[in-house]
Image (tube, rainbow, N blue to C red; front, side, top):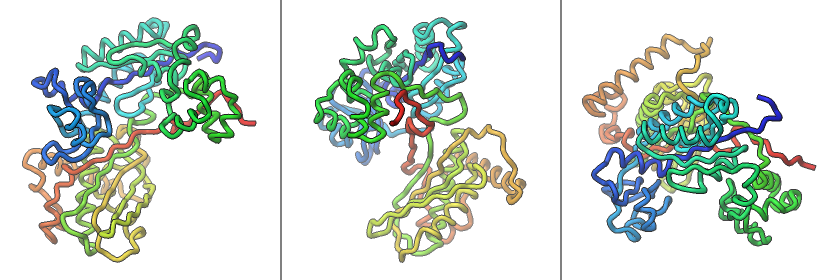
Length: 429
């Protein structure tokens, strides 16, 4: 691509993603307020997202379920199904991939798409955005809002500008008129604290931020001030990553508060195996492997400790995850028992279709046997229930091993914008 040619970047954002997917599976709730999150039976947890009827009644992301019930008494709560949302995310990205090999996820429901080299085939950015919007609606049954611009930051602003099911173009001719009057808080990485600090200096809009001396902003915010200046003026030049060079999330994990305090290493090993099997199953279901294992431990006095380990090779095998987790625990836990809760996550994810580098210090035959054992265990549990097959270690404590970690709370963490590198138009002095 020529360096002088102006880029054409789309940002596609699935509208009320979790709720929209759930509405497809609950057609009887059409037109009713629905919120995804927490436990609908126990009424605890927070709202992850809500559909538009619920939002119009005051239900907001991050609300406790009881608060959502107060503002919208007839709201229907459904528990999150991350595997289902990941599947829809994959399908959306397959559609985007028909128009570009530069597709970068920003969470499960958002993607940047660099269609600069595709315009000669499919038309200009607006035409491609219309085609993508139509296909998402027709093939997946949900809607997207799409922003079109020459940089990632303005493209994201465009997808937020009108919702739902809308397309907004910010180009060189209209960006000052449309973007500069917007609140500075609409800009990526201007949170509540940053927005309050900007307001203290008399900066309330993106235009006012763009017109402020970048090095004055640096004196107030450090390097982030230069970044925000470039973001506001549309000078961010960060490229869109190529398809399949990353996954939309950076880690999958699970944590549990155990049915009784853990008082020995054997107790810990039982729970670590349960968590490892749970996380490994999630990784396999979504076709990921991970290079990093992290363990989090909380004592009965509520003191927390966390540590991670980089693996020799990426894995989604429960035995390998547990071995790494147990090694981490032995190094991490120097306090006396008991333990109240344990969390485990696998991070630095890659698609499981990537070529595998053989390890001289690890038996590939053993790894394949463990992988097949996992697959057979998953198949049996899917057919006959979680407790139909268990490791012999679980016989040591039937009460502790009765925990179904697969059904417990799972943690899915999205990527940050800066993790893949950021290039702005401002140079430091």
